[in-house]
Image 1 (cartoon, helix red, strand yellow):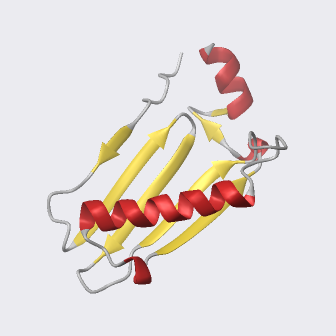
Image 2 (cartoon, rainbow, N blue to C red):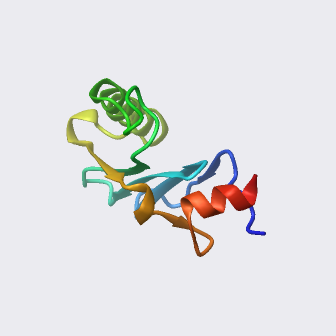
Length: 113
C-alpha cells in the first residue's frame, strides 16, 4: 500500500539567494513556492483539486483570495520577498486528472482508508 502523504512537509534549501523553493504538501494538495535570484519576483503556483469549498466544486473566490494573501505574507515573512512583486497563480485540477502512487486519487483514497 502506498504511503500516505505527510500532513505537512516543508523543504527550504540553504542557499535561498541562488534558487529558493518551498514545497508544502497537505493531503493531496501541493503548494510550491519558487523564487530564483535575489532580484527576481517570486512566482507561486498552487495546484488544488476541484472538490470541497462551499459548493463542493472547489474553493470559492473568497478562499482563493485568502490563499493569495496568505502565501504572499508567508514569502515576505520567511524569505523577505516584496509583496508588490509576488505573483500567485491558482490552478484547479479535476479529480480524474490527479493521481498519487500510480493511482487516480479516488482509488488511492479508497486503498488508504
